Length: 349
Image 1: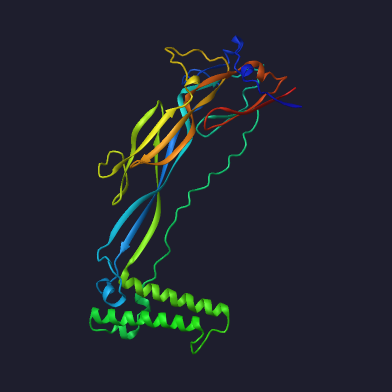
Image 2 (image 1 turned 90 degrees about the horizontal axis):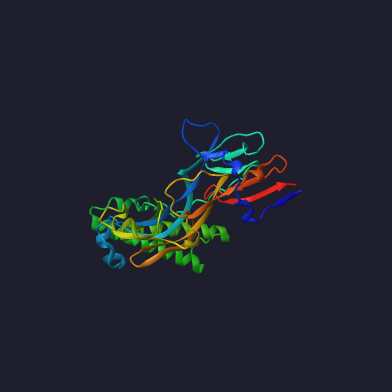
């Protein structure tokens, strides 16, 4: 029968007999199973949208023939921040490296580790982690080239002004054809709804492509930028990156952009680990009890992210004792490899 152990006070007890089975790891000194506890690295993901405008080759005639005002004749690119997200991830903590010395009387040799050596499970297998869903980045569809819809008469025009005039007439002809079809007044009406839809879509496509030769095209594309920060202490108004509407996402030391700030506040001071001058010899399987940090990210006074995240550096470590791994008990433990905390512990009795 499996029995879940809920009393953390029991887990935190230590026995002197177990002190010789787990120790701080020193390379090339002892033999055994080496594992790390993780420390928290914050991953800041910024999704920025790049908007690019390309003028049409007939842009100077847009107002004359299509009555389109304020059509720009120069290409330009603008950026905007769409989303900022922060994730808490675990990396090996070199100050929390331990070695488990093998003994016949205890069952701590069946240890599962991550590829980085972070402890995942003892005497069992950790559950398969769900793959994180990638960010959905939006991107404009391909813009059709209006030149492929130009008639022979337009292409043979002797000047750009004449080409613009004939192209505008073609646009108005397309609009008139659509109106006649939609009113049911066309000479050759589509036989069914599907044919009607197809014809209208094709006419819309031609009109849009030809109009872009006057008004130009604007494309929008999302791009992902990732930054990392290690929250050892409280952080106030730290510049993690800079942003420019003209240049986009920049590094923190590039003064061409305005600063994006991050604040990290320890909201679990009651369990903050005391400062120790000397390392005390560990007395069992060490695990983390992570603290919490309130993380905010802001730009130009606007808050883009404001949440609480687990931060192991703001927490403490505790000990699982030798008696829990006696062969008669067969204790199974699953750890969270991101934080080093216990997610499940049970035993046979």
